[in-house]
Image (cartoon, rainbow, N blue to C red; front, side, top):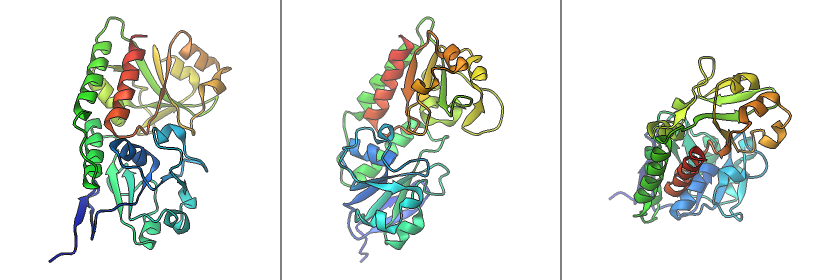
Length: 285
């Protein structure tokens, strides 16, 4: 008789087996925010190589402030990860092959398995949410019967707003500095592609290098003719307050609303619904 009583297949096709259901989960901050919404608060969270010494509050979402932040990048070593005594690590994957933020060698050194769920650009937003729901349920969290209705109502709000007269053209970006800006390619982001499916007119920045972003100057961005800007609000993006003296930014946003955008939105129904409702409100502002 097999001693395995818990099993889960992640989005890389890796089958994770354990003698009992994991109870101490450590997660990449985005994954941890999703699991917390489902009702499972992680024993610790970690960042990626883009993160600093403190957890990015935008990525953290509704995570309690007392959830330990174990580090990011090379600082997430065996000592740091082991401090939380995890029996499972949850990460995301952008290529369906490799965990994004954790060094799997570090986890292996502690004998801790890694589950990686896909947030790849080609993955439908609904699939992202469903996969995290499946993991939460596998970890003993009851399914949320209201989740479907919450998302459906938010989608309806966006669809209605996008169909209204004079609905704005939306440009999505991440400010890199006073001279450069990264312009999102809508087709490579699950939540942006979902907005397009609901009828939102998203600006394509045009051809050029870069899979997810086109990097340009601010004058080019201003010339794209957007009426609403979704701006990366994460800690690694330059905040709008620091762009006040940039002519292209001023021209782009003069008389047009700027909505904070989290490119690493927690894949959970209520976080997703809040994002959709915020967009719907901005479309009719």
